[in-house]
Image (tube, rainbow, N blue to C red; front, side, top):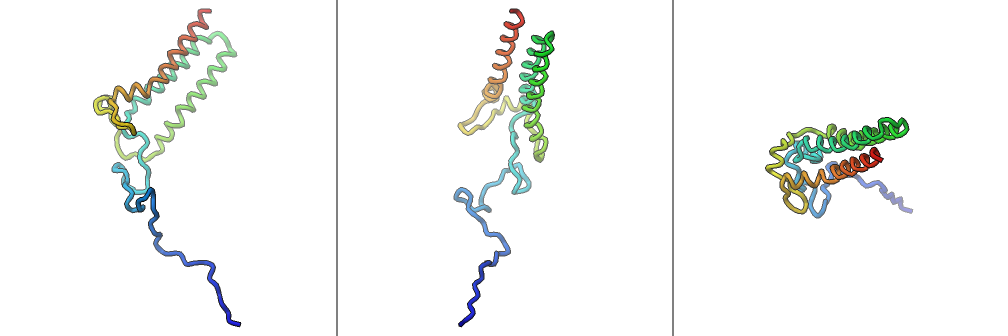
Length: 156
């Protein structure tokens, strides 16, 4: 009987071969222009100024402030306000931490440059004011509604 050995472990190539990504070969996939290393991701918010983040923090501070003023005299309600403040700090702190951990490859625009230049989205270009309104509508509406409810609760 002949000894037929079967090699079950194929040899791996030394150089990995390119693989298709969305119909393109990996070497042909365009890389972000703001990135020196070809395997690092794009920056998360390269075209938003830090002032927009501070406006969001201000809206949440407005909500917590309205609760503090309304429930200052009730210890049990004040305890819930502290819990809300902790939730808000986590809600805002996690994105802040993620942004601080990403590699810095450039400066974000100032608020004046952002308002002048605008923002490119999937559906087209927005002026800076249109983008700012879209970003701040929900937080400011929540803060306004919270203030109205707190006024009703305080005056009742």
